Image (cartoon, rainbow, N blue to C red; front, side):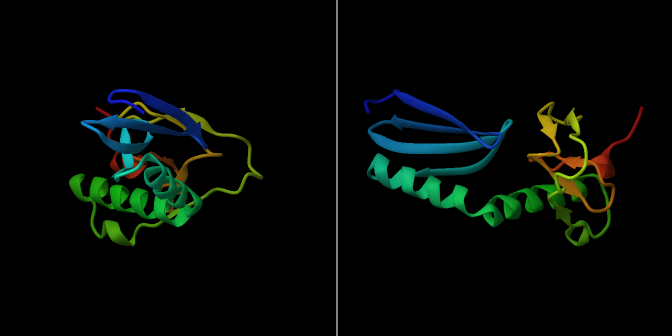
Length: 135
């Protein structure tokens, strides 16, 4: 791959970009506008292996979203944000589909996590109902 050339893929609601910049292969895994993983290496195959390993482990994505959620809640002045957990909704319920009020990213109950405190769909940026205020 030459500089500037890109490959883009969609996988389980994520956007994965592979490219070369200044001769260095890199990749970015995005959920909406939120970067979940960014990596570079000396070969594109090593970059792709790192991304595959990241995507194979759902706990790695859950960990990043949990950190983003705690940071968002802390910025909103909510006490003990680290104690507010998240969960993946079972697909037995009807599909819920909406968008994030904070960043505008599309959310669905089949892809996104849910906040244990407010039971709203949780955006990868960390936003949930706990930080939502009507004006």
